[in-house]
Length: 413
Image (cartoon, rainbow, N blue to C red; front, side, top):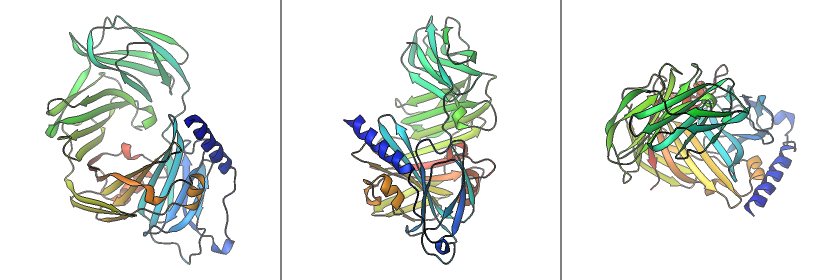
């Protein structure tokens, strides 16, 4: 029954893509900003919805696009002047397992200008199967990885791996009983093949120890490698993944193949205890850091009352990010992120736009529940506006994961 419901939803959405958005008389139309969608940001056959709101959440403009390229966002409502600042919401949706995942990103305090938004999802060019032979006795999970794909599993069965780049490399890492961390590297990994890797002889990885500012009862550590300094997320090569919740630890050792893919991204999460609803993150692009960079900020109090989220914080940070969540009975999962500059203690959730309501009649702003709120410190940028300039730069747009940041997250009880 779930599949029938999902198929019906997709038919309605695709049909909606073929309709022309309503227009207003020319004398009421004003261009508020330009947006250039690149790198297949808009997935076929769906559309991207863009709506612009006033600081108090009221609608200025509401439109949708079905094709990548440059577009103008026009006001559909009478206005004498272009507002000096506003909120921009970008809505993108696609299939996610047996559901439809709707991702909404709202950026507050935006000034008129031109944005470029690049997609990070990449279509596969094929797949190949990898079989392991002479597997040594080991503990924990096995990491399989190539550019854009990874699998962390206990399975030693043949693995079918998606390939996004050719020629590619392939990497297998495990914690062996007798020798500790070991890996196997395969060059010339191509589509449509069946590879057999002999693990009777494995190589010793290099390692880097990262210290924590306190003993973490739970932590996650991820290390990626990149072939060049563009740090394209769709080409990330996972070198290590550690999820630990045993005895508190004040450091972690990350392993990686020596002499290969020297451009790294290190993503760390530490939590003192599951009894404490505060989590710290550190995201570093470039060299693997020797220590966890802890943000000098704290969340004192958070409250959601209708459309208003009240934040009380202390310390130094550049931006905040709220995550709201709603799951409908029609297999629709909504994730809504709202970005605000530091010092903005009253965060308004904008009204859902008419076009979005037409596509998803079941959703309303009041349905969204606050899941967490995050304070973000930008290492090499000095303000929220500089963050927006980096994310939507017309020459080289970035993703938030491609910025060096430290953050603290308050989790819903």
